[in-house]
Length: 294
Length: 322
Image (cartoon, rainbow over all chains, first blue to last red):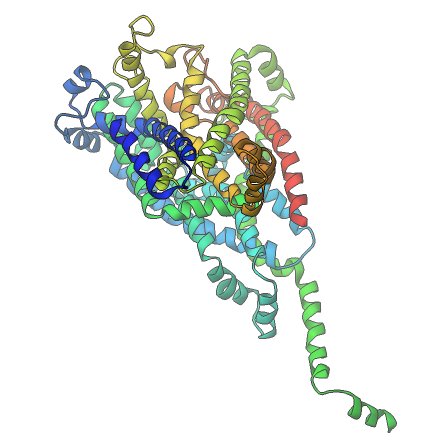
């Protein structure tokens, strides 16, 4: 704790305004933030600690204590007994198809709704917007029947199609806002040059929207990776499981192997953490473009 | 003759050739309309209608039938009988409804306020700002089912952190923390994980909203002698109002959907005390094989969502037309 308190003092002297009384407020604020941050980081830290402790250490030492010696065996056990690699492969395959395809559908629809004038386009946009609000669980039962009738139970396609459907609304809503902000004069110049809607879409609007598309791509990847409810009803075979199903499966099977259990959790969230750290700014931008649209 | 000379003399060469191509262009824009937009809309509309709207309509229809969910079994029309059973005989439904309402109300206050405070604190140059933001936001990108397992471990009555804290501070009877197995507490224990999950998301939304607060206005209020609270009350807060609405709506939407966290932490127990509507609907359809009841609950869920969300949609599309 003492190291924490030293830092703000230094910082306050170095950077902030000349008034001393302001500094106290800032130091207090910084301390409050630091304490909150420590609390916020705790769950991840505990899981990390536990994942590296032997069974004996888990039972005998405090959760707050560092692992004495890293017990990598937990990770090996989790990999061996859990369905992590198969599930990881499934999740990756599903995301690799769903995310680009869904985004293309969304972008095309948002283009049609924002750059081509026709009656009732607002109504269609509203219908899409509504879909972003309704809980997926409302549709679970009938969705199961549709996929069953299509013969796609336990197949990646059986979740990819509903994922595309449920991913569209929010993306269309955000991209519609983004496309609408691109000046309309561009359209006219493309059309005067003899270009049609397709050229406008592929060569002008999409390239201009790269930041929004990149942000949505990343956000959608994470959402697809994390989805649980639809996967739960469609992917019932262990061989077809995605990561969230594997987590829950491992949890209910090995209730008291705390070490491997937490190692499994860590490994399952690692890909998303890496994606977050690599593409951090896109997360913020994606949220921003969504929020600005309102 | 005179006409010819007149045109020759009067008209400057440029505007005349420009006129003809402009009319067909406008005409094309006007007449193209829906037919032109259709190829762009078709894939999305098809996926949306088949996999989102269709199933929702089906859910409402199936709520009027008795059906096991197996294709080999018949669907028998029973009218509103499922609803009668739901409202009069299903005690768990009322628990689930109550929990969902509590969840929505609590989440409109706690993670929103927390997110706002985080955003206000981090909307200024402060040492370690990016680290703070990241740590607060990261839970929001984790799979809720993973979060559920992390928190379940922390709530472990023997070795979990809360038990150890309770023992260290001599709280309780020394038998450790049993939040998740206590019917009165379980739902709130799950809610704590939810706060951890979405406060950072709200923070990022508020940070985005804070960018629209006029710096000049804040400065001039300061020069007029306004203190922090007054600046917030009269300058920042009014400018944040649209963001607050967005955060509120998203919070309601997130709260109604809560499913993974409950599945992973209690499965709705103990004794169905932590059931929520989304999970109870699933349980009826897929565990009890009572699709009629499951879809009746889904329909109630749909109705609640529409009642809460449609006013916002009307408000926001009106706003967008300006």
